[in-house]
Length: 333
Image (cartoon, rainbow, N blue to C red; front, side):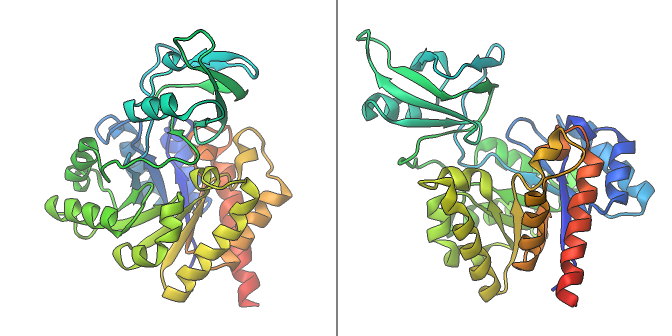
């Protein structure tokens, strides 16, 4: 097993070159750039800071772009909306995609709606006024534009890539992209489509990472492996796809075991150091999670909001990197 790769996610909290240099010195090998809310061109200043910091640290950084893919998202809001637990809103108060809105209208009372990777939970309450479906806020929070939306029990047939995704691939070389993360992979057909788009863009050497974050991806895992360079156990939406979050650890172990058997690299990501978004020291459970992911054979581990929007991005990388190295030493012993 090679050295476990360490990834952060680039964002406002680490846009400064000096902070990125600290992150590289703490052991970071590369970063993820989330393109669900922006483009390579719009992120050019961040990317310039990344490459500048890497040069000064003598590092050849990996730049992983996380595509929009088939994930469904709400539209743009005039301003963030605070959804208070126990309050009610109309279905028209949120800009749902048409296919989601139609499904909600046909589902009837009891249908759940997950927003922002499941942080916010709504439930359909019916049509008390005869006109507007009411949604009860079961689990509240601040809702911002372009956050993800999922309806437990429903899947939607959407293209593997948006036109914006294809445009990003056409410009990937220009910005030094080394890998593409394809979200919500459902079958090998999704990966074949991305490979074809990479080839058309002259980017055959860019690695393809398949994010497993729905039941279709788990079920079809064996057929995905030959068509990607690495499997990503994306625990945020994967957890939302379970009947209960307590099912997630077994699914993670299953994916890891299949990847080991097939000799395919895999990454573990989501909430690895979530408490460090606002705290300087992680929980014991979080460092144990990282340690066990490495023992399970992970080729790479990644933090997301901890570095993109957290208060201590370099410190988060320190804990991620040092815990992974300690796990490697444990295996060597």
